[in-house]
Image 1 (tube, rainbow, N blue to C red):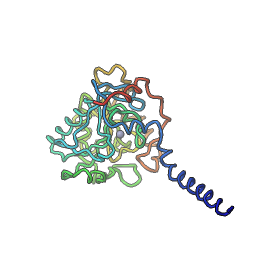
Image 2 (image 1 turned 90 degrees about the horizontal axis):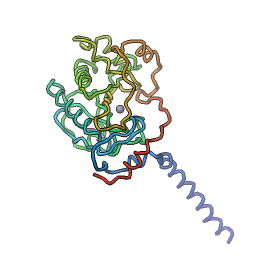
Image 3 (image 1 turned 90 degrees about the vertical axis):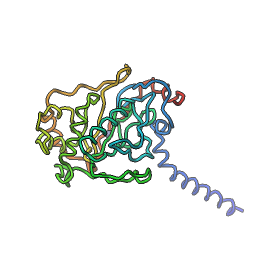
Length: 293
Ligand SMILES: [Zn+2]
């Protein structure tokens, strides 16, 4: 009797322990950011950016089509291909310009979730539909079916040790693409790995020919050795969009860059030190709850 009574008790305990172990990853993921990643569609109404790139959200987002002249969106399952209409227009514009310059299509990575907001993994920013990751891989590429876009070749532009560019990968094509992006009036700044910025400052692949002014918008950051990150200016009609501190004058080939070059790169180049997430602006709750477009 006792034995029989104990058995179910033990199995129940084992079962609940097993369940708990299974649930731990889910519990770890159940941060506030999850609700933003699960919302299926943009909110209705005009496009509006609220807050800053690392503590904000977005109303009236639009989705970048999976393909266009000069680009392909990858990792479609993430559903981070939404942005402010300015961002969608920027990507299409850059892709057309790159194509006209004779470049192969580029891959477009993360933009924002349908209503922006914090992402459960991968970035602190990308919250307001003004950020886009564009991959440096400019090798010729066939149009890929969606499933094949989950795992494409995204090589680093750096040599082993992450201190210098790999000239077999990073050359005139990448410089042309960066130059086109930096010349776009909608762009506020572009993040690349400090070793890439350093190479541009040294004039690699003609980077300094015809003037160095464009280098000002190219800023060093952790990671960003396989892709560059374009951030747009706050759009018109978004009075609640928090503008970033303006870029310092000069081409940035200065003490700031020297500081970055002196840092020991994180073990994984894509991992940046991440400050605790600030609270979202109150207006974002309404955007999360708003009816879909
Ligand atoms: Zn990014």
